[in-house]
Length: 311
Length: 311
Image (tube, rainbow over all chains, first blue to last red; front, side, top):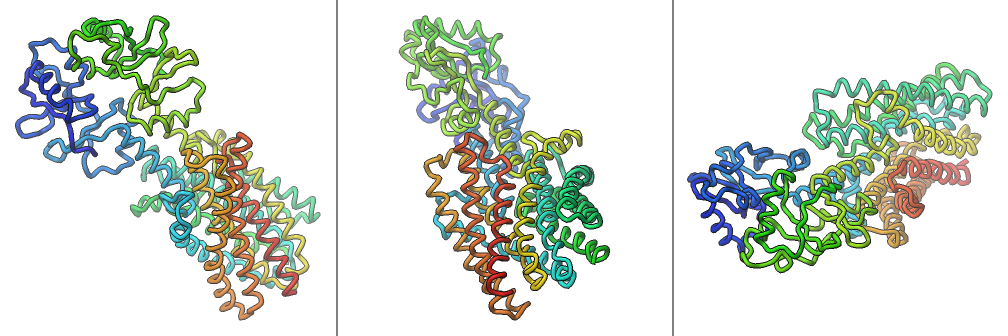
């Protein structure tokens, strides 16, 4: 916010206002809008340079100002919300007022471009557990420090997945084919989750969906995962049948892929919505949590079914 | 681009210009800058409303116009480049000219906000292999059609990983502990790749790095992966030692984690730069390719070392 705003009193005549603007010329580099305030510094309206230029000479500022102030900002507003208000209105400057309507400053369009760049970089990088404002040429130590916490979280989720596999180790010894197909079940579920996650995190960031859409979105994304699972799973099962010539094994590959892709769709939407509901950033490390669940869950379903029906 | 631009001839006096602006008032809703053209419609400079308002009355447009036009745009420019020029300059309107300097139109700051929103959504969603402009409430069929091609690519990379595991299936039957630790090696390498990918794709999109930085960035990211691998790998190996009480096995877990994290850092930077070099979008499905390599590579290293030294 720039607290240094060119203001006019509402009682001035247009001629007085133009003289005032002339006096301000050295003080303010770029004036396009002049905000009009009353004796208590409360914001009353706005006059553009153009409005002043084209106004009938006898009129007063109060007569020519626009009073329906669109996109008023509060100092407590979230940066991202400000960016969306700016994008949705046509103005390149928006006034910031306190609860008494006193003008505190302005936000200009280039501030907002910077905010949008920053915010989408942050979301992008936090999703994968990199530093929010990390650049490629940051000192190695900075970069490593920012990534390490999420790698530690990932180590925990990976050990959980490994523990799940460990439950079935005696069956894997009997049927190592189970280990051979593990990466397929986990990979496809993780990727389904990543697709859902990308669209969900972005929709939440852009304000296209809110917390009340959670149930609806989670159901739809689970459905998308399952529908994709029917076809992709069938293809996976077909390849499994070609390579193993075992129909029972191929069927279990299909069912496990199908369920894990549904789980991916569910977790990819459930996790960002849940983080949002907890007032945390929906992007923060959510791909690590999603993959954690699709890995552990996928192994449990596949190795569990395999242990029951094949070994 | 808006081709409907308020222009002034450079030969006008300021008084004539103000009259011209008054006549334009109904035609152009929002004029802040008046672009100045010569008799051939070639762009000569720009005058702000404020400049016109504050100018000495006798002067001519040519005397008061600003001629150092910053951020001139060409009609062939990439949308993303336009957004960055706008963000880096202070202007809320930039002129678009052809090769003869003829004014074709203007780009306004709200166009650019829309471009930035779109572009970062596209990058975000394409990285995971979702549709570039997919929304959560698109019809299920649209959404599924956009995601299926990348799931098929993922199925191929997953089968390659599965094939790699298959090479070692007889050794897994002897030592199923290898299958139990597979998810740890693959998971941590994949996540290291995802972290690198996020920062690299974003830096490429923002123009912070170019194709000539490829070698440097790939080396640095590999180094970051390896350094993180020393510590995270040691921790993984320690947990492996606690759970298995086998020092040889734990050492191999460490080495495999270390190498796979280096591989993740390398691929996470190499893949987007390579896509860029091939004039493809650096975001497009690159997480699928990166995870594909860290899965297959990680399994090969870990199961290979395990087969040589443990079985």
